[in-house]
Image (cartoon, rainbow, N blue to C red; front, side):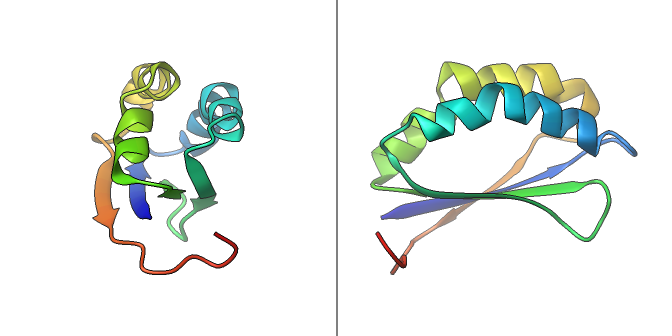
Length: 99
């Protein structure tokens, strides 16, 4: 298994706008992606932070999703609302409940 943690810092007050774009592009893509074992979309305590933890069957599934059209559309549409490019941390998932 393979996991990614993405941290998005939005421009002040734009988190809800970025979430709406995520719901439009990412939520259906994730729901239909057999390579995703798990996905958590969450807000950080900071009002301008979004954190997503993604668990995949393999490193290849993770790389394919980050390069997919829905992800690229999400980033393109939200780019002007982000303080900077998302921080991506690769995680070596050692165990995932239910996987």
